[in-house]
Image (cartoon, rainbow, N blue to C red):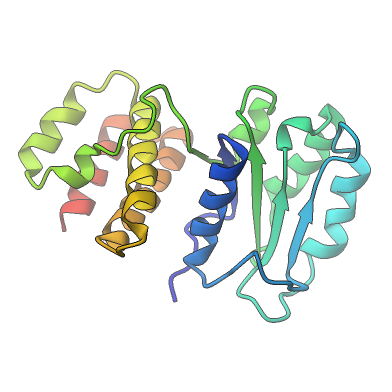
Length: 218
């Protein structure tokens, strides 16, 4: 069974797409959120906000050991509605999350999420300016030299990775029914997410992109 590379994620985009991305993310560890489980805890806004009390209540769940799943799973729906106080409370959890827990924030975008939160999550965007394309150079090109030339011209590594992840996600949806190359696409998405996390941790972006290309070519 494959395990998740990181513990905390932010999935952005339209409601249906971000939930589908969450399902795909968790499927790596054989976790189906459509099934009832004491290890899955989903919180939603009460009226128009997600309150600090709701976040504090997570602690009674998140620090328990999983009963039947590999992880305790916390999903925060419409995370853009977290109050500032709630986000600061969540930050304390994200700083030292228990090893047996995965936290996923779902939001329409990251504009309302505090920078301190963003620095501690891997962001997966399901919708970017390039729209609904499925042309990902990481999958379409089998030429290592071509890929290295492509990344040498990248001015904004994070944006480039976001675009690639969107293309890969759209391609995954397109190919899922026929189960064509799904494993390769899922691996590329995970590798891109890992690359973004390394860049956010101040690792040299050029080195990160080169390692990404070489890793995918193995």
